[in-house]
Amino acid sequence: MGALTPDTSTQAGLSRSGLYREASAGRWERIARGIYLPVGAAAADWDQVEAATRRPEATICLLSALAHHDLVDAVPAALDIAIPRGVRTPVSTGAISWHRFDRATFDVGREDIAIAGSDQAIGIYSSERSIVDAFRLRAEVGYEVARDALREWLRRGGKPARLIAIATRLPRAKSTVLNALEMLA
Image (cartoon, one colour):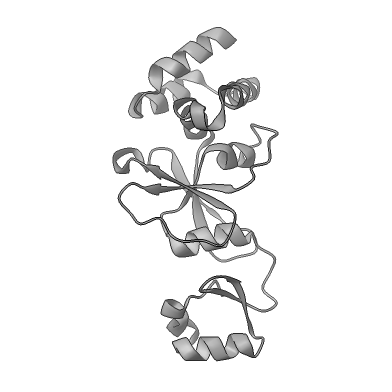
């Protein structure tokens, strides 16, 4: 069984107050404000569980996605999560950095992955989309991070045509990615 909130407690056959009683009795563990997991549940990344529970469209992006794809050596201080512009940014207790991405391009390069130790899934951007986003938002993540991720991706056999196809669909990306490809070639 996955994470429960007071609003979804009926999935486990509990009322809202029943969930609180079960948590007080030690059968459910509170992992974040309003989010509970069964005691003895497999180890999981609580930040990913919290993000996926608070926003079903939550997508791992930027430095966190680059680290997931093993394209950078940096360990992000917080989980970078993209949500569509116009939705409320949830209040979270975990180390989550929320980013707002344009609704029109939100699903470009997005796929779902299972959260290890959980029956939940969370979105993640492909390595190509993550590299393009790193160049687009280089003031936020650093140009060196974007360049190093691109270099590693190319070293592993990445196809520049796939990168350009993604960059063409995103604003302010194509020329920057083309310049970086030219410099590395």
